[in-house]
Image 1 (cartoon, rainbow, N blue to C red):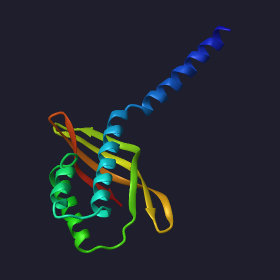
Image 2: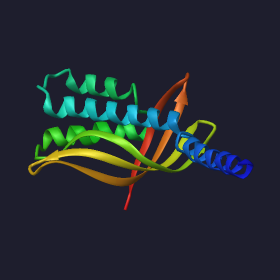
Image 3: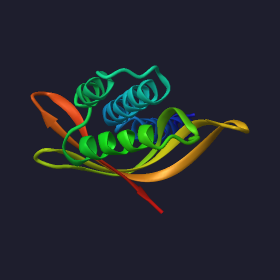
Amino acid sequence: MKNGFIYLLVASLLFSYNSIGNYENHKEITSIEYLLNKRIEIMNDFLYGSKSVDDTKILKENLSVIEADKLLDNDVDILYKVIDNPTDYELALNVKVDKINTLNETEEGMDINANLSWRMSGYDGEFDLVKNYDIKCIELEDKMYLTELKYNN
């Protein structure tokens, strides 16, 4: 009876340790998913909404709430080019962090390598893509901003 109780305690300890490991990056996952989904929302509103003269100014203002540095400038430039040269693009509906491979905290913020699961819509319907990205974030005045989103082949 005593051995059975000890085995039960050891098994419980192992299962609880594995469960805790799954939640260790919960805050980072929530932050990254929020920023990336907000980015999708802003870009889709710009690309698929009605256009006015003020839209380009509003686009940069909206993106600057979640992006900074090179990523902000790059996204604005790309979106202007897409508007000037329209074509069909697959629509990103949302994104989730599938797995964080590495997370390094820096003085400015975080450097993350993660697998992102993108929910997309195209001519053939909705589908999911999982791709690996290097993500950099900075923290300014207690607020997180995306500064780099680099796809890894």
